[in-house]
Amino acid sequence: MSLDNIRIVLVEPLYGGNVGSVCRAMSNMDISDLALVSPRNLDMDEARKMAVHAGDILENRTEYGTLAEAVVDCGIVVGATARHGLYRQHAKAPRELVGKVLDASEQGKVAMVFGREDNGLTNEELTICTQIIQIPSSEHYSSLNLAQAVLICCYEVFVATGSYEPPQEKSEEAPSQHRERMFEIWRETLLQIGFMEEDKADHMMLGLRRILSRGSLSVDDINIMMGIARQTQWAAKDVNRES
Amino acid sequence: MSLDNIRIVLVEPLYGGNVGSVCRAMSNMDISDLALVSPRNLDMDEARKMAVHAGDILENRTEYGTLAEAVVDCGIVVGATARHGLYRQHAKAPRELVGKVLDASEQGKVAMVFGREDNGLTNEELTICTQIIQIPSSEHYSSLNLAQAVLICCYEVFVATGSYEPPQEKSEEAPSQHRERMFEIWRETLLQIGFMEEDKADHMMLGLRRILSRGSLSVDDINIMMGIARQTQWAAKDVNRES
Image (cartoon, rainbow over all chains, first blue to last red; front, side, top):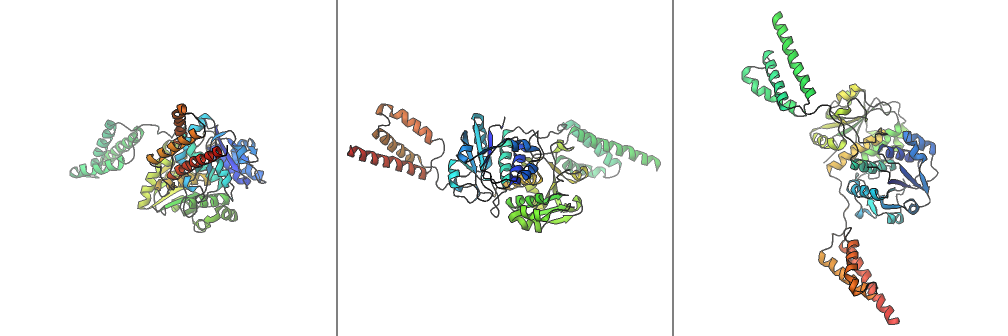
């Protein structure tokens, strides 16, 4: 699923560093359409510095005089608002809204709109939004930095596409037969080296099973554990011969 | 649920601005224990500026010579790694790990460890970590800014506590009887003003029902819609009298 139809709109941003950080956050989440509404004398050197490898998003940005112009071709228009806004009672968390945003982005452009660093969005601007989003945050300090707010929204969209493939373990969970063979060898070994006596062996092996069953055990893991046990048997025999 | 047991550990951070942004992100998500491992000549003015209202977290930070010292009292130690690391195959997404992190934080301290801006964590440092986390991100630009990476992890923990109360609509979904009364009044009104004829009325009312059923309709919403219809009836009668 492509995120080409998602547009990030910043209304009257004040700090170039924030705009650059927004570009990097967007790029990290595969979103590239940036629109600025009446930016205020941005420090573009700072913007380029903070964008790092996302300078293309900064260069390809579009600029508009008003929010209405920036979203004129958008279906859903999602506005981000702080915790204590007038529109709070209608706001939803990003995770609640993200399905709707993705559905709409298959039909056409969707805007996610973020207000001024110092003053957020005006009521008139919020009126243009079809949905209001509020990022879960502390009661004691609810106001996120602009780029941080953009990141959370882009991250939720990116995760919801399911395009991110979680890392895979190289080998799968080992089959029971393989695991049981390992425990047999460890039993022999622990008896041989005198760690336990025959009458306590079952109890002790339950302990070892508990420890090794807390996570997962791949074939590789089991081979390592069997290798240790076999080597221990060999070394212990050697010691016995010498004594 | 308190997040007092969650410690954010930054290993050899380079930029004061990043450390300040980390403080703000932590505070936004109700996390306050910050540990630095051998910080590199940080610009503390920049740090204080970016921390904004989270200066207390910056002032109360602890500093250590090595990662091992910074996490000596921690149960689970979660290390954040970039997409293409040696340990990638064992990494999990933050959302997968957050339950384990919260469970462990009820027993004692838990660390979330973030590497250098330029070089991440060393293999030796990753060895100290009991879990490896990897933030979902673009294949094309997977490296997040330090404060952005910290924010995502803190946000996932904060959301998982369920302590954030989503905004509530003031009035609940209206009961069917109330909704049906509104549609009756609209039917009368639309007939009265000549918007539709009796033989097309059922079909047209289905359209109006469809439009008004797409979202939810609270008692307040229905009162507004009934008010409009009644006022229309009144105004239309008035016009009829004048003509």
